[in-house]
Amino acid sequence: MNNFEAGAIISTMGILCGIVAIIGSFLVTYHKKKNERMIRQSIIENHVDAEMAKLLVKPTKNKNSKYDSLMWGCSLLGLGLGWGIDILLDLREGSLDYFITLAVGVGIGLLAYFLIKSKLEDKDKTEEKE
Image (cartoon, rainbow, N blue to C red; front, side, top):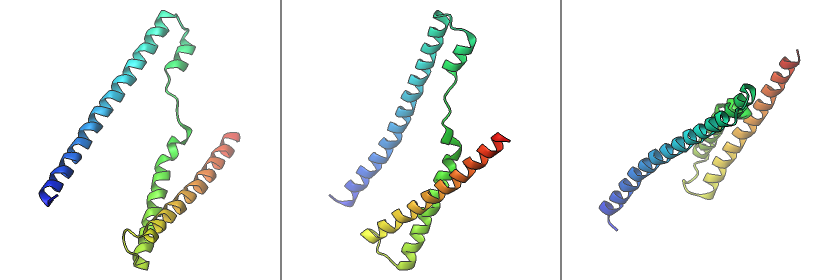
């Protein structure tokens, strides 16, 4: 396989990834709206009272969603820390030591996320009690 064929395959795969992402997001949105419409119709047909209808239609909130950006930030900072250590130790890219150092960096970032999140949740609980 020459360079032209490899480049053509890579370009085609890149374009296809974008197309698949667009089609996939369209299908997910379509099915979500279809399900919401079905729920509304069943609420109307079954004469459900207003309070129960609010509970059925209201989207459920993920409690950890407010900490998602914190998790990603700590993970990426840990990855950067691991990469910096790789540069300082002059590790060869693609070696096992290189990837282990990156993984340890991400692990340290996730550990920091866990500690920060637990402190913030404890602080929120004490503020709710007061």
